[in-house]
Length: 126
Image 1 (spheres, rainbow, N blue to C red):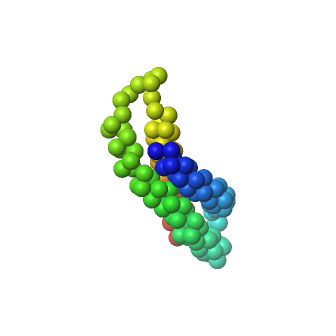
Image 2: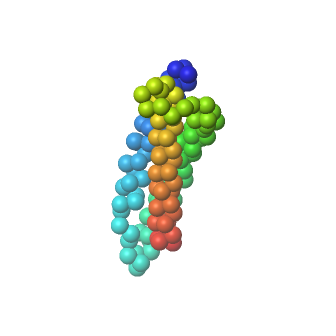
Image 3: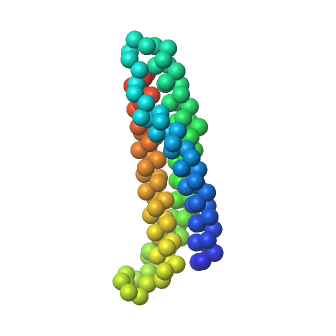
């Protein structure tokens, strides 16, 4: 179990660093105010830029976290089904593994919200 946690932790750190680098550019696009309706060329440029960020950064980021979540889900389900709920007498490795899986799920949900916001922005600029 400790080998699995070590491997998952390493993969999670790499993906989290990628997330940290990508989220800056994604937030810049999301925070950028929409151009006025009369500024067709600027709106088109902003729409293309937003679409590029969606395809090149947001969707791959989501897929990385989602695939990692799906890979770990069977083991997490097995651990949950075999374990007993005990406040003082618990296995720390099992708890850490499940905690990592929950954190990955939070990132998956956050990435879905980012993708939805980018799609809304692209449609507004449409």
